[in-house]
Length: 184
Image (cartoon, rainbow, N blue to C red; front, side, top):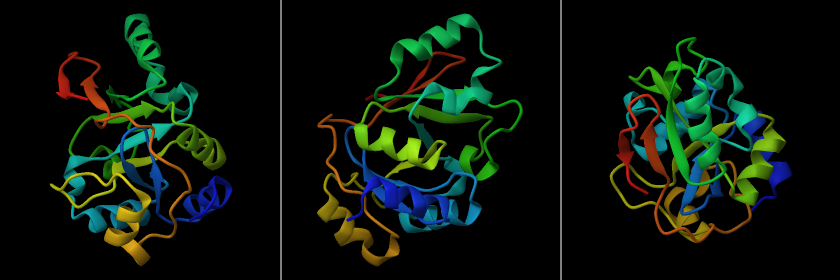
């Protein structure tokens, strides 16, 4: 188990970590490091086509994606963040790399209220990948012990902390259509 400061250094040096979120344990890395993202996807046995969620400490960490939004769209985001609400935001300037967006023209983003996540994203200085710690198609892991058992030495570290007690993963909605993609 490592503290947030050490975990931030691991992420900034291309490593992958597990960390607690509001509901489940997540796997994370620097989203702009293609090798790190591919390592996570290989661990999860998940296709790059599906894309991954980015999680941040503040809306400012997603500023390039927010610039072209309407005032109404910005208000929707502000009303739902921080918290367990992931939004699919248009990415017309391709701010996020292909291996983050997958086959989509949107980026899945969330501003977390979880203190470990907030501290981690502040330590890293930008958003990080947030994908549930589990093999594709299996239930997300709920404890550090389960993460250690499933992924063990494949990770570069596990961050100290506990999940926030929420019962379900974040809700995902498309900002342009308002469509609920995943119920929380």
